Image (cartoon, rainbow, N blue to C red; front, side, top):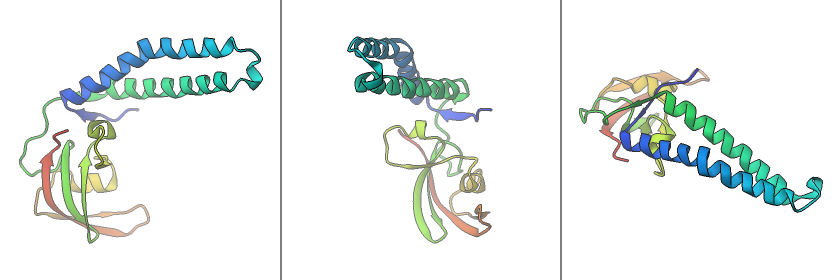
Amino acid sequence: MSETTWLTQDSYDRLKAEYDHLVGEGRTEIADKIESAREEGDLKENGGYHAAREEQAKQEARIRQLDELLRGAQVGEPPADDGIVEPGMVVTATVGGEKMTFLLGSREVAGDTDLDVYSASSPLGSAILGHKTGETVEYKTPNGATVKVKITKAKPFAG
């Protein structure tokens, strides 16, 4: 069961290009590496062959991940800059007394940024979803503790 992921058109296009490369050119490249390593002889002691097979497994896992993500993606414009917390927003909040800035959404939307990412379905994400700047909400952690969250800023992610 896949979760819907909000993506900007730019993020979707970037991920789709990666997917297209991996299923086309990428698969050809790895097959060539495996074939070259296979020609070197005894497969039991052939480090190049085993490394190429491991790389192939990682690549196939990434292809499956991208395929699922792209099939379940909701593509559209960034959310409105209205201070209401929703997926695709960079949120600054005081969480349990500590100031945090993070993206509410998915790691794929964040791309190469250093932002921490919280899913809208995480305890923190679901607690702040739909609330606006200036509001204070609470959520329970998995161990039962209650954490107060004061939302101080919510702006659309500019990628």
